[in-house]
Image 1: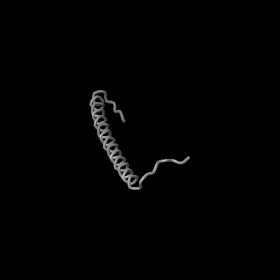
Image 2: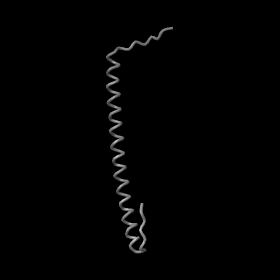
Image 3: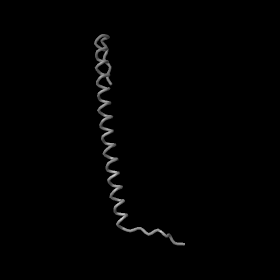
Image 4: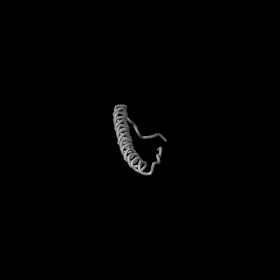
Length: 65
């Protein structure tokens, strides 16, 4: 029993180009999301460190993160 599917080479090449574009877009989106998450993390960490340092001045203790 044979397979009745016959693919033209041109169609395969077109789909592989589309797939690589989609993969590149997904990778770029992931990279941007990671950069935004890192920026947000650093911002929250800075705020937390500032609050800890303000409290540490009052109590004469220092906390290292």
